[in-house]
Image 1 (tube, rainbow, N blue to C red):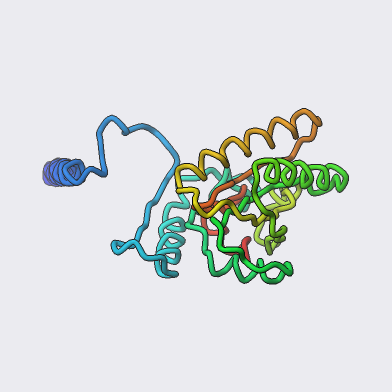
Image 2: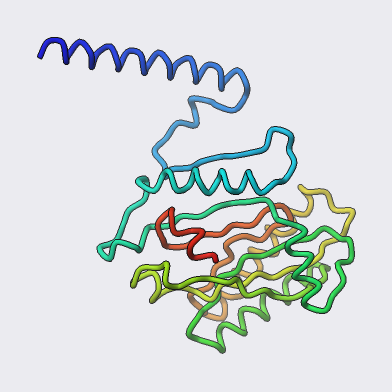
Amino acid sequence: MEKMTEKTDFNATTYLAQRSRNEAALSEAGVYGPEFEHDACGVGFVAAKDGKACRAVVDAAIEALQAIWHRGAVDADGMTGDGAGIHIEIPRDFFIEHIARTGHDYDGGRLAVGMVFLPRTDLEAQERCRCIVEQEILADGHFIFGWRQVPVDVSALGDKASATRPEIEQIMFSMPADFNEAEAERHLYVVRRRIEKAVMAELISDFYICSLSSRSVIYKGMFLAEQVTAFFS
């Protein structure tokens, strides 16, 4: 019994010492600060050291996400979670290909994508939400290429998540090419807030803008971490 206690104390001491060294190294590199320590959901971050987009980064992020499944709550049905998702850089070539399918030629502007959750069962409200989204984007001077219905596999969801799932669509549009990233994101924040206020004024529920950006797009839902890639087929 005494040996077990000594071993436990030794492991704890070793762990704390190693953690202290890691924190010091990360702090020196400018990627960590003790003031940011707080309780939160599990979060992973993966990036390419050369800054170039590649599929391997996304695959590694998915693998990391699946490794922290234990950080989320699970409903009694065993499949409905309290939310999981992945935040990635906009895959430009992928969306430019889909823009061509809408009958438009990509105009060389700053490509932006909105991930929009629409009311699934109220088709009138669903169409009204689309109109509001388009009106506010056009009012800010941008050109809309069209909408893309996001392919999903509902069999990956639990009963509760399936019963309340939204209609998930992406709106693709072009912003002025001379906008820098910070300027574009400021514009899109204002557009998003105007859309949300207009939808609220219409007393429409079950509407949510998951992301609206010229930089990145978010895929998420009320499922377990390992179900992200299964649902977004």
